[in-house]
Length: 149
Image (tube, rainbow, N blue to C red; front, side, top):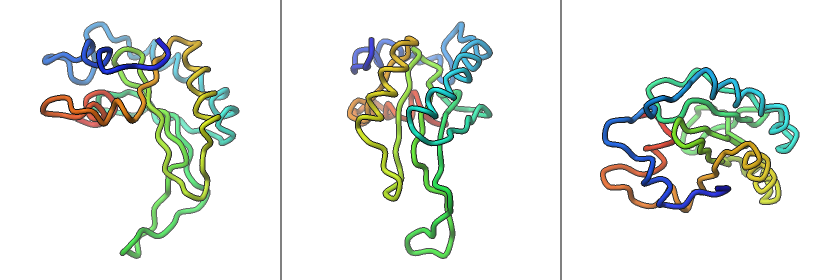
């Protein structure tokens, strides 16, 4: 499956397994995700960094790129680093999602499709925002499979 549907997410949902499903092999999965970085960086045309220090979450790793300089936040003097792209890997069902956050460094739809095609060839399943936004009972699908719990 290249792109997940709601039924796929529902099939992976469990009332007892929140952070990882039974049998999840963290070392193996993280090792596989690490090997994806160089190609993902090439596809995205940004040097991606890996966040592999995720705890208490339903995802376990994320490749991401930040804008080169921090910017001020609206209505505040605080500065923050805006994300250009993030590719977050769930501990469930070899799923991943892609997020974008920079108006100064937009990522094209063609780039998104190349990422999806590349990861599909490695048996990863893309979960689009339209599916993540659907209600999931007492939670949303974004939190259930791709966020801190």
